[in-house]
Image 1 (cartoon, rainbow over the protein chains, first blue to last red):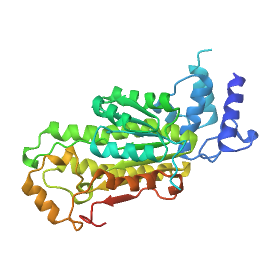
Image 2 (cartoon, rainbow over the protein chains, first blue to last red):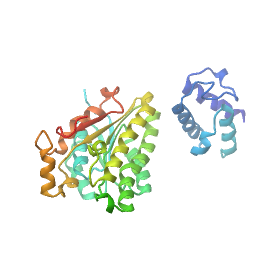
Image 3 (cartoon, chains in turn green, red):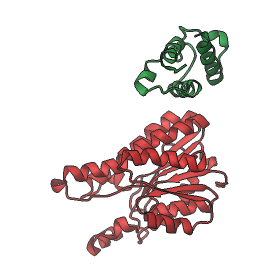
Image 4 (cartoon, chains in turn red, orange):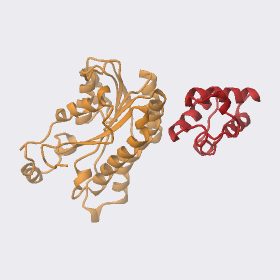
Length: 79
Length: 245
């Protein structure tokens, strides 16, 4: 499970250029980590690729924080 | 400047008069291209006339599956799509009081809704790669309106507003979107007009001639070039002076 968080953190650090210790579960992509709306779309695409899952648009819109992403991925990835 | 070598382009409506010239121009400047349309014969003869790499994808834009397949095939052929020319469009002219729901719907489906679907699919890749040059073909009547063309004119006005909106959303990713608004261009689409109507139109064109598809090429190349990265959300009118912005 913490493996998911680590992978998510790596993706966020790479995309948003923030420091790893800022990418905590309660951190909001837009409010806390400086993402703009296109960044959030790109992050979701990166999560889809990394974890081999599809994240439909309505689910993507509800992923506001790092924790939301981790929870969604954990509930939906195959292994 | 304007070297498109290494660039990959997708042109819709390439069996039409304007689409063919756009494909030729992109090819002449070095781009690898995918051409799509409904008339495979015309697409094949277009491909045969070109020097650079060219792939044909048959597509009926009013069918959603065709649209999804179009983008997928284009990306399979070329790897990426750097340049997208949304040129496909139809008319179903009628005086308004006789215009059927179907005539209204079909024009919007092909001209606006399919553009929406293609743009969604293509901009995804462009956002990832942080590069894109998109030109949407509108029309002079999208700005001036046109009697007997309420559906066509409305859809072309929609293209302009969509272009402006998207240009704002995607500007930070080095993706530009601009429109060309052709005036009266000699192609199959305009050849059906009766002589009297043609004469009336000709009298209101300062250049005193109808446009040719080639008249649009230079602006297209200009807009899709790398160097035009600071030009976005604009509409370039190419109409011999018929309308002045």
